Length: 408
Image (tube, rainbow, N blue to C red; front, side, top):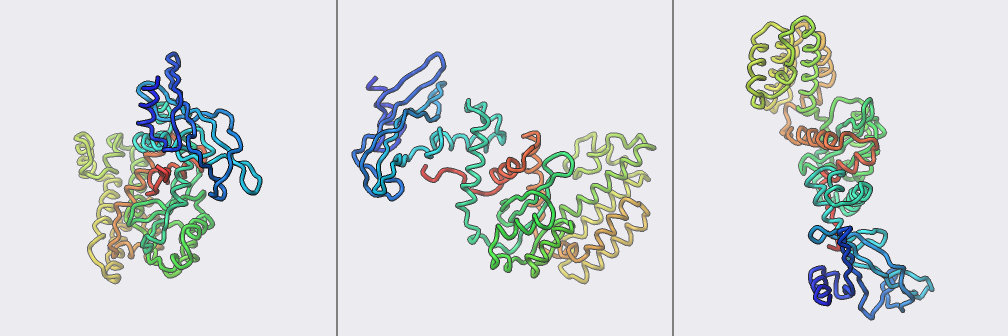
């Protein structure tokens, strides 16, 4: 057994102050218990970091550690307690686990790594042989740790993005504040009203940072526009290409659903019409070509969308961009398709932000990528019932945070 203890002392490396005094193996439960003991004669008051006198030890406690082969491993230890100069008894600080946890830092790091790999809390819990609540708690705390350690003053906050995402069936939404240049989500707040947008902007940035914001990418949602005007009056609004094209995609689908009732040839055509041509399957492309060559109104709407996409990158002049937009709107409106005409009128009512999108050099890829990745989070988790869980998941996977415990 001495050889076994020497082995664990060598590979576990809990520090010079801790030594494995005993090892217990439960072959039936496939568990290993490592009994740690504090071996340093020097004690510190964790409150003052001053030398203190040993008072007693806590009761025997247990922490989950990294597995050894097929055995779940647990650390058991009685933590020394000291009496400070103020007369209060406190347990000493330990370097291998948080004082309120019953798992080690190395176990937490493993859980974070597995979460990153699986993107699924339930699967991670299964792989580690622990409860879902423990993994959920690790996710929440690692996010809060990352947020507290993040320094936004080091980011060039000149362009930001505000978007809405649904997280429950019905009309439950969150507001997502992100930084397109780094691709990171800055924060998430509940709701999509003006107050939600104001709160997330003012909690994320200092007044000086808000004054330095030059452009805000967002949808044409009026509450967001109101919040931006109040918090960042000097910033230009940009209705980015991704959101604008999304409206036209909805128009395509609305017309398709109306026409499919009289035209069975449109059955199963949804993805053929909404996908980019390069991503179509052979069957989808064949159906797409048939529809494109037809006289269906949905075919006309598809061409309207493609013509709109062609407006981007053609000019960086505001006057020319306005002329391009007016010509596109006039030609499209003449088609007389009611679903699309509503969208065109909405675009014209927000012409300033739309023209800013046409003439700016802002990359649309981040908005599209982030939208898909948040949808993936929802799909893998099969939805979220609580806002707190959805927020933590978004920030955990896409917040660009330093999630790991700093002591390791």
